[in-house]
Amino acid sequence: MKYPHRRGLHLAAGAVALAAASLILTSAGQQAWSQAKRTVKIVVPFAPGGGVDIVARVMADQIGRMQKVTVVVENRPGAGTLIGTEAVARAAPDGNTVLFAANSIIINPALRKTSYDALTSFEPVCLLTRSPNAVIVNSSSPYRSLTDLINDARAKPGQLSIALQGPATSQHIGTEKLKRAANIDMINVPFPGSAPALTSLLGGHVAALFVNYPAASEQVGAGKLRVLATAARRRSLPDVPTIAEVVGKDYEEDVWNSAVVPANTPKEIVAELADWLRSAMAVPEVRSKLTAQGFDPAGTCGADFATFLRAQATEYAQIIRESNMKAE
Image 1 (cartoon, rainbow, N blue to C red):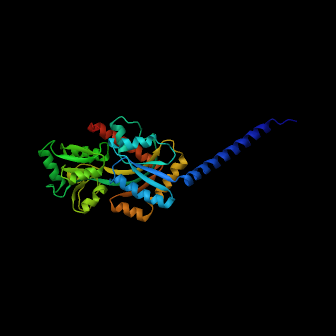
Image 2: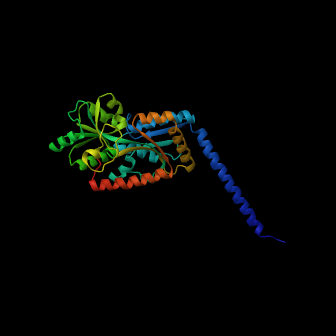
Image 3: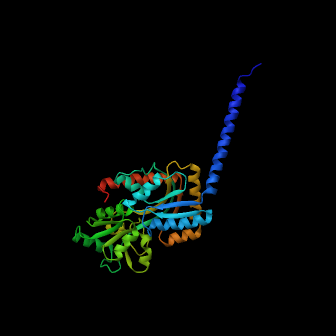
Protein backbone atom coordinates (compact mmCIF):
# COMPACT_ATOMS: atom_id res chain seq x y z
CA MET A 1 0.00 0.00 0.00
CA LYS A 2 1.38 3.39 -0.97
CA TYR A 3 1.37 6.43 1.30
CA PRO A 4 1.69 9.54 -0.86
CA HIS A 5 1.80 11.86 2.14
CA ARG A 6 5.19 10.49 3.19
CA ARG A 7 6.85 12.52 0.45
CA GLY A 8 5.41 15.64 2.04
CA LEU A 9 6.77 14.56 5.39
CA HIS A 10 10.22 14.09 3.87
CA LEU A 11 10.04 17.55 2.28
CA ALA A 12 8.92 19.12 5.55
CA ALA A 13 11.73 17.41 7.40
CA GLY A 14 14.15 18.65 4.76
CA ALA A 15 12.88 22.20 5.15
CA VAL A 16 13.37 22.04 8.91
CA ALA A 17 16.88 20.71 8.44
CA LEU A 18 17.64 23.47 5.93
CA ALA A 19 16.33 26.15 8.31
CA ALA A 20 18.41 24.73 11.14
CA ALA A 21 21.48 24.68 8.92
CA SER A 22 20.81 28.27 7.87
CA LEU A 23 20.57 29.32 11.51
CA ILE A 24 23.83 27.56 12.29
CA LEU A 25 25.53 29.20 9.32
CA THR A 26 24.20 32.64 10.33
CA SER A 27 25.48 32.21 13.88
CA ALA A 28 28.76 30.82 12.58
CA GLY A 29 29.02 33.72 10.16
CA GLN A 30 28.52 36.25 12.95
CA GLN A 31 31.07 34.46 15.13
CA ALA A 32 33.54 34.25 12.24
CA TRP A 33 33.10 37.99 11.60
CA SER A 34 33.84 38.75 15.25
CA GLN A 35 36.91 36.52 15.30
CA ALA A 36 38.33 37.41 11.89
CA LYS A 37 37.61 41.15 12.06
CA ARG A 38 41.01 42.54 12.97
CA THR A 39 40.64 46.06 11.58
CA VAL A 40 37.64 48.37 11.79
CA LYS A 41 37.86 51.74 10.08
CA ILE A 42 35.93 54.67 11.55
CA VAL A 43 35.50 57.43 8.97
CA VAL A 44 35.14 60.95 10.37
CA PRO A 45 33.94 63.38 7.65
CA PHE A 46 35.49 66.35 9.48
CA ALA A 47 39.01 67.66 10.01
CA PRO A 48 40.94 66.36 13.05
CA GLY A 49 40.34 68.06 16.40
CA GLY A 50 36.58 68.62 16.18
CA GLY A 51 33.79 67.18 18.29
CA VAL A 52 33.08 64.13 16.12
CA ASP A 53 36.80 63.41 15.91
CA ILE A 54 37.14 63.55 19.70
CA VAL A 55 34.29 61.07 20.22
CA ALA A 56 35.59 58.78 17.47
CA ARG A 57 39.07 58.54 18.99
CA VAL A 58 37.81 57.91 22.52
CA MET A 59 35.49 55.16 21.28
CA ALA A 60 38.10 53.65 18.93
CA ASP A 61 40.60 53.32 21.74
CA GLN A 62 38.10 51.71 24.11
CA ILE A 63 36.62 49.30 21.54
CA GLY A 64 40.09 48.23 20.43
CA ARG A 65 41.07 47.33 23.99
CA MET A 66 37.77 45.65 24.90
CA GLN A 67 37.21 43.66 21.70
CA LYS A 68 40.88 42.93 20.89
CA VAL A 69 40.59 44.36 17.38
CA THR A 70 42.40 47.14 15.57
CA VAL A 71 40.29 50.27 15.20
CA VAL A 72 41.61 53.12 13.07
CA VAL A 73 40.16 56.61 12.64
CA GLU A 74 40.34 58.14 9.18
CA ASN A 75 39.51 61.82 8.73
CA ARG A 76 37.96 62.58 5.33
CA PRO A 77 36.74 66.20 5.48
CA GLY A 78 35.52 68.35 2.62
CA ALA A 79 32.43 69.40 0.65
CA GLY A 80 30.39 69.92 3.78
CA THR A 81 31.10 66.31 4.94
CA LEU A 82 29.99 64.83 1.58
CA ILE A 83 33.40 63.33 0.75
CA GLY A 84 33.57 61.10 3.80
CA THR A 85 29.84 60.38 3.98
CA GLU A 86 29.49 59.33 0.34
CA ALA A 87 32.63 57.19 0.59
CA VAL A 88 31.07 55.16 3.40
CA ALA A 89 27.75 54.88 1.55
CA ARG A 90 29.70 53.18 -1.27
CA ALA A 91 31.75 50.95 1.04
CA ALA A 92 31.24 47.20 1.30
CA PRO A 93 28.44 46.37 3.78
CA ASP A 94 30.63 44.08 5.87
CA GLY A 95 30.85 45.99 9.14
CA ASN A 96 34.47 46.95 8.58
CA THR A 97 33.72 50.58 7.69
CA VAL A 98 31.76 52.74 10.12
CA LEU A 99 30.78 56.39 9.63
CA PHE A 100 30.78 58.61 12.69
CA ALA A 101 28.15 61.07 11.52
CA ALA A 102 26.74 64.28 12.93
CA ASN A 103 23.70 66.36 11.98
CA SER A 104 25.14 67.00 8.52
CA ILE A 105 24.24 63.48 7.34
CA ILE A 106 20.59 64.64 7.51
CA ILE A 107 21.11 68.29 6.53
CA ASN A 108 23.05 67.75 3.29
CA PRO A 109 20.32 65.92 1.31
CA ALA A 110 17.88 68.71 2.19
CA LEU A 111 20.30 71.36 0.89
CA ARG A 112 21.80 69.87 -2.24
CA LYS A 113 21.92 66.88 -4.54
CA THR A 114 23.75 63.99 -2.92
CA SER A 115 24.56 60.46 -4.01
CA TYR A 116 23.10 59.08 -0.80
CA ASP A 117 19.79 59.15 1.05
CA ALA A 118 20.24 59.66 4.77
CA LEU A 119 17.46 57.25 5.69
CA THR A 120 18.02 54.47 3.15
CA SER A 121 21.74 54.47 2.26
CA PHE A 122 22.84 53.56 5.79
CA GLU A 123 21.96 51.20 8.60
CA PRO A 124 21.65 53.16 11.87
CA VAL A 125 23.78 51.71 14.65
CA CYS A 126 23.83 54.10 17.63
CA LEU A 127 23.32 57.68 18.71
CA LEU A 128 26.44 58.21 20.82
CA THR A 129 26.51 61.73 22.29
CA ARG A 130 24.78 65.09 22.27
CA SER A 131 26.43 68.41 23.05
CA PRO A 132 25.60 72.14 22.82
CA ASN A 133 26.74 74.58 20.21
CA ALA A 134 27.96 77.97 21.39
CA VAL A 135 28.71 81.48 20.16
CA ILE A 136 32.33 82.20 21.03
CA VAL A 137 34.70 85.14 20.56
CA ASN A 138 38.40 85.77 21.03
CA SER A 139 39.23 86.74 24.62
CA SER A 140 40.54 90.06 23.28
CA SER A 141 37.21 90.80 21.55
CA PRO A 142 35.26 93.91 22.63
CA TYR A 143 32.11 91.78 22.82
CA ARG A 144 31.45 90.83 26.42
CA SER A 145 28.00 89.39 25.76
CA LEU A 146 25.86 88.10 22.92
CA THR A 147 23.82 91.30 23.20
CA ASP A 148 26.98 93.31 22.42
CA LEU A 149 27.59 91.22 19.29
CA ILE A 150 23.96 91.48 18.16
CA ASN A 151 23.87 95.25 18.64
CA ASP A 152 27.07 95.72 16.64
CA ALA A 153 25.82 93.41 13.89
CA ARG A 154 22.62 95.47 13.64
CA ALA A 155 24.68 98.65 13.41
CA LYS A 156 26.89 97.11 10.69
CA PRO A 157 24.62 94.88 8.60
CA GLY A 158 26.55 92.47 6.37
CA GLN A 159 29.95 93.56 7.72
CA LEU A 160 30.70 91.27 10.67
CA SER A 161 31.82 87.72 9.96
CA ILE A 162 30.95 84.57 11.86
CA ALA A 163 32.93 81.38 11.34
CA LEU A 164 31.24 78.01 11.40
CA GLN A 165 31.93 74.37 10.76
CA GLY A 166 30.19 73.68 7.51
CA PRO A 167 28.38 74.23 5.31
CA ALA A 168 25.49 71.78 5.81
CA THR A 169 26.14 71.28 9.53
CA SER A 170 24.33 71.95 12.77
CA GLN A 171 26.44 75.09 13.04
CA HIS A 172 25.18 76.25 9.63
CA ILE A 173 21.58 75.63 10.69
CA GLY A 174 22.19 77.24 14.07
CA THR A 175 23.80 80.36 12.61
CA GLU A 176 20.89 80.91 10.24
CA LYS A 177 18.43 80.40 13.09
CA LEU A 178 20.37 82.92 15.20
CA LYS A 179 20.38 85.53 12.44
CA ARG A 180 16.63 85.16 12.00
CA ALA A 181 15.89 85.17 15.73
CA ALA A 182 18.08 88.24 16.41
CA ASN A 183 17.22 90.01 13.13
CA ILE A 184 20.86 90.47 12.14
CA ASP A 185 22.90 90.03 8.95
CA MET A 186 26.37 88.52 9.34
CA ILE A 187 28.73 86.97 6.78
CA ASN A 188 29.03 83.18 7.11
CA VAL A 189 32.60 81.89 6.81
CA PRO A 190 32.46 78.06 6.56
CA PHE A 191 35.43 75.85 7.40
CA PRO A 192 35.92 72.09 6.80
CA GLY A 193 36.07 71.48 10.55
CA SER A 194 36.00 73.20 13.91
CA ALA A 195 39.80 73.13 14.32
CA PRO A 196 40.53 75.43 11.35
CA ALA A 197 37.57 77.62 12.33
CA LEU A 198 39.03 77.98 15.83
CA THR A 199 42.42 78.86 14.33
CA SER A 200 40.77 81.64 12.34
CA LEU A 201 39.06 83.01 15.45
CA LEU A 202 42.25 82.81 17.51
CA GLY A 203 44.02 84.70 14.73
CA GLY A 204 41.45 87.48 14.81
CA HIS A 205 40.25 86.88 11.25
CA VAL A 206 36.54 86.63 12.15
CA ALA A 207 34.38 88.44 14.68
CA ALA A 208 32.80 85.34 16.20
CA LEU A 209 32.45 81.60 15.90
CA PHE A 210 29.40 79.34 16.09
CA VAL A 211 30.90 76.04 17.18
CA ASN A 212 30.25 72.79 19.03
CA TYR A 213 31.34 73.68 22.56
CA PRO A 214 33.47 70.56 23.27
CA ALA A 215 35.72 71.46 20.34
CA ALA A 216 36.50 74.83 21.97
CA SER A 217 36.42 73.88 25.66
CA GLU A 218 40.22 73.60 25.99
CA GLN A 219 40.84 77.09 24.59
CA VAL A 220 38.00 78.50 26.67
CA GLY A 221 39.48 76.91 29.79
CA ALA A 222 42.88 78.36 28.90
CA GLY A 223 41.38 81.84 28.72
CA LYS A 224 42.02 82.26 24.98
CA LEU A 225 38.35 82.30 24.03
CA ARG A 226 35.15 83.59 25.64
CA VAL A 227 31.69 81.99 25.43
CA LEU A 228 28.88 84.49 24.86
CA ALA A 229 25.95 82.05 24.81
CA THR A 230 25.09 78.40 24.26
CA ALA A 231 22.50 76.99 21.88
CA ALA A 232 21.10 74.53 24.41
CA ARG A 233 17.50 74.71 25.62
CA ARG A 234 18.71 74.96 29.23
CA ARG A 235 21.97 76.33 30.57
CA SER A 236 24.74 73.80 30.10
CA LEU A 237 27.33 76.25 31.48
CA PRO A 238 25.96 77.79 34.72
CA ASP A 239 27.36 81.29 34.19
CA VAL A 240 26.63 81.49 30.45
CA PRO A 241 23.15 82.39 29.14
CA THR A 242 21.41 80.47 26.37
CA ILE A 243 20.67 82.11 23.03
CA ALA A 244 16.97 81.74 23.86
CA GLU A 245 17.45 83.85 27.01
CA VAL A 246 19.16 86.63 25.05
CA VAL A 247 16.86 86.83 22.01
CA GLY A 248 13.69 86.09 23.96
CA LYS A 249 12.57 83.36 21.57
CA ASP A 250 12.48 79.57 21.55
CA TYR A 251 15.88 78.42 20.31
CA GLU A 252 17.87 75.19 20.45
CA GLU A 253 20.46 73.62 18.15
CA ASP A 254 22.71 70.95 19.59
CA VAL A 255 25.12 68.53 17.95
CA TRP A 256 24.68 64.78 18.00
CA ASN A 257 27.32 62.23 17.13
CA SER A 258 26.31 58.83 15.81
CA ALA A 259 27.54 55.65 14.17
CA VAL A 260 26.07 54.27 10.94
CA VAL A 261 27.20 51.64 8.43
CA PRO A 262 26.42 51.07 4.73
CA ALA A 263 22.93 49.82 3.85
CA ASN A 264 22.52 46.04 3.63
CA THR A 265 25.07 45.35 6.32
CA PRO A 266 23.82 42.08 7.91
CA LYS A 267 21.59 42.68 10.92
CA GLU A 268 23.71 40.47 13.16
CA ILE A 269 26.80 42.55 12.36
CA VAL A 270 24.92 45.81 13.02
CA ALA A 271 23.72 44.38 16.33
CA GLU A 272 27.24 43.37 17.33
CA LEU A 273 28.65 46.79 16.48
CA ALA A 274 25.88 48.33 18.58
CA ASP A 275 26.86 46.04 21.47
CA TRP A 276 30.49 47.10 21.11
CA LEU A 277 29.54 50.78 21.19
CA ARG A 278 27.14 50.40 24.12
CA SER A 279 29.74 48.46 26.09
CA ALA A 280 32.39 51.10 25.43
CA MET A 281 30.00 53.93 26.33
CA ALA A 282 29.16 52.21 29.63
CA VAL A 283 32.77 52.31 30.84
CA PRO A 284 33.05 55.00 33.58
CA GLU A 285 36.41 56.21 32.27
CA VAL A 286 34.94 56.75 28.80
CA ARG A 287 31.92 58.60 30.16
CA SER A 288 34.10 60.83 32.32
CA LYS A 289 36.36 61.64 29.36
CA LEU A 290 33.38 62.64 27.26
CA THR A 291 31.50 64.60 29.91
CA ALA A 292 34.68 66.46 30.87
CA GLN A 293 34.77 67.83 27.33
CA GLY A 294 31.11 68.81 27.22
CA PHE A 295 29.53 65.69 25.68
CA ASP A 296 26.37 64.10 27.06
CA PRO A 297 26.68 60.32 26.48
CA ALA A 298 23.54 58.85 24.89
CA GLY A 299 23.99 55.25 23.79
CA THR A 300 20.65 55.03 21.97
CA CYS A 301 20.78 52.23 19.40
CA GLY A 302 18.69 50.29 16.89
CA ALA A 303 15.05 51.20 16.27
CA ASP A 304 15.07 54.11 18.72
CA PHE A 305 17.98 55.71 16.88
CA ALA A 306 16.25 55.16 13.52
CA THR A 307 13.16 56.97 14.86
CA PHE A 308 15.35 59.85 16.01
CA LEU A 309 16.92 60.18 12.55
CA ARG A 310 13.50 60.33 10.85
CA ALA A 311 12.34 63.07 13.23
CA GLN A 312 15.51 65.10 12.61
CA ALA A 313 15.10 64.78 8.85
CA THR A 314 11.58 66.20 9.05
CA GLU A 315 12.62 69.09 11.31
CA TYR A 316 15.66 70.12 9.26
CA ALA A 317 13.81 69.96 5.96
CA GLN A 318 11.26 72.41 7.34
CA ILE A 319 13.90 74.82 8.71
CA ILE A 320 15.87 74.79 5.45
CA ARG A 321 12.74 75.35 3.39
CA GLU A 322 11.40 78.19 5.58
CA SER A 323 14.74 80.02 5.81
CA ASN A 324 15.61 79.46 2.15
CA MET A 325 19.03 78.19 3.13
CA LYS A 326 21.54 77.41 0.41
CA ALA A 327 24.64 75.24 0.39
CA GLU A 328 27.57 77.65 0.43
